[in-house]
Image 1 (cartoon, rainbow, N blue to C red):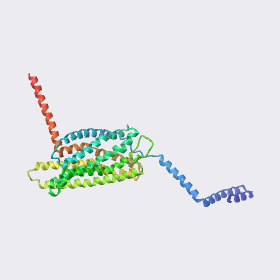
Image 2 (cartoon, helix red, strand yellow):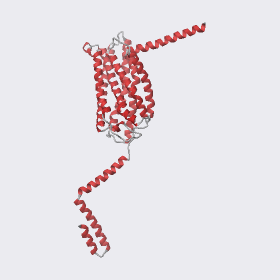
Image 3 (cartoon, rainbow, N blue to C red):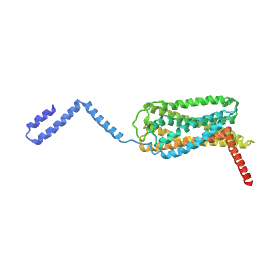
Image 4 (cartoon, rainbow, N blue to C red):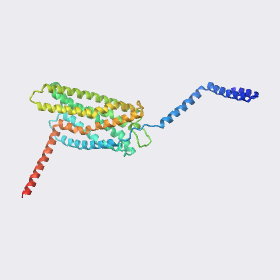
Length: 375
């Protein structure tokens, strides 16, 4: 209506400049009328346009963090080889029949089982990090082997806490606490621990993943659905709570044990006290080196996985910090045989007898060679 009116007015005026001005005014009036009559349509168009533009800009940039992991694999190979042979030797030592097996041995055997699970899946992580894995192997690593690595970590944390607690109870020697130091109680407690850890970690394996296009660089979080991501965050925070609780158990148990030992410092068993202090130091030092750095990094890294932290450079820094501290956590595979040696009589006596027999054999062979040369 406004357009017709201004067109008629423009035709009636002989001045061309005035006509041009009227036409421009007419177009402006027409656009104003459209906005007044259909405001929702124009607003929706603008929103859709800018949403599409934002989506185009965001899709053109992806923050790649899961790359350049090959240097870590050399350390993983070393840890795997040392841990594998140490665990095999420990299994050989623990197969000895021990009629006087204490609850401490039960905890150490469970620690050994967790170590064997880690040795089974560590090669998969090495192949994936080297960039040599097929797409199906990457999926298997994210759904299975990565979860088993974390199962080993928290089983190790819990049973190292039990080892420290058992040493504390042996030092106190209280008759009221005698029942929880029995082998049957230790087995029942071990079953509860495995059920707890598996109930936290297994859903990460069992929740279905989503199909994504194959690409060279992919993170395990990329395969997870919304439910999978939510459970991943929840299980991480539960695991962190487990770490802090058992850190408190180890700290309190070791403080009580050290205090009790120092009250008996002048007794005749000075050598035994020194040996006990060495054991406490080994467990505490190994625990701090292996597990504390990882759990300092874990919370901010989890936030970066779920885009609470969005800065790409910070995401990359947190990823490499997580991989470095995870390497320290996996190194408990090399640390655990030292724990077996100092806390298990079977393991220690087996090593002593094995190496003493080898020395005797070498001495016998050397004597026979000397006789042959003399003859």
